[in-house]
Length: 426
Image 1 (cartoon, rainbow, N blue to C red):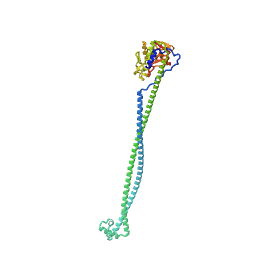
Image 2: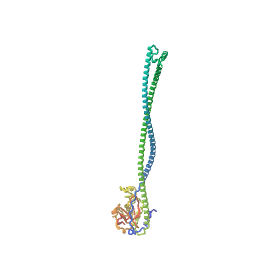
Image 3: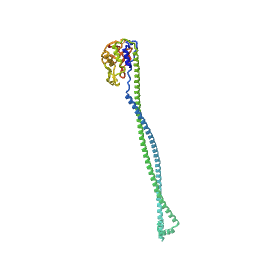
Image 4: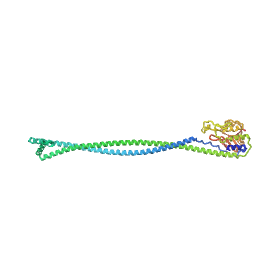
């Protein structure tokens, strides 16, 4: 048998007493309103959000680690490119120095070649004069070309005659002319080769410097791009971590709120259990049958949900919207009672029709001082009774539909805010 039916049966047997304990019982503090209970969907959404953001942080952390590794690689590439560029600068400077030295050597060789050319020309003219003088004396020597450029027997004969005719000093001078001619050719060749070598070396150094500069620029661009990407990832991760902290805080708050609500519900159940126990221990008394009917009818609804605007003479009904607290608790979707609706249903069992508003119910019967109240009287709170109404059971206990988020229950009388008069309808 359910607790409400047990209580109702005990009342039907006349167990509850009309003994008033108001004069001996201390004031009971008003029961605090029920803490709001977070919606399961809201909790699930919050947890899913935390899980998603946690996964996102992990993903970003992995991406950031890869980006930082790439950034270190690019830092190394920039350092290597800078070293190569420094080497290219040194090589270019060396090549430029060599080019300058080679140019100077070429210039010197050119000067020496020009001097050698003039010496050859001077010797040619001198020997030509000697040959001309010999010709005038009947010699077959001819000219210096007979010696220098002989290509046949006749010319060789002329060369032999020349050799016979010239003195040893002239032969020595002629040999000097030949050496000067060879030296001129060698120095010309050396000057051209030195200039060509210096030019080629400088060109290679210039190209190497350009390539090194290009490599440095590319490495720096890549490094800067990767650094920007790394910073972007870091900023995104920091933002997601902030969002994660907020989401965790929200979920923790919801879970704490849920825990407070569950603790409150457990406390209410303990209080209701204690109230039921105390109600069963009240000494028997003389309670009229009509009053027992009213009380039993109210007790039969213990555990039925509170629904603002719910309840009529036939039982619980769907609640209505209030635009505030009741809507937050979804009373408009619940079938149950509010405080005045429970009174309407209870007294309908005795053929009494009560108005639907507690403030009007306060004026529906005879007012009696609290010191003279008996089971079946209605108790009211707030100015004009417009805040709340409950049914007195005796023994300092009452049955009520307290507020949104709760259910019909048996509870000790709360004296805070209680009107000084009870209302007796029967």
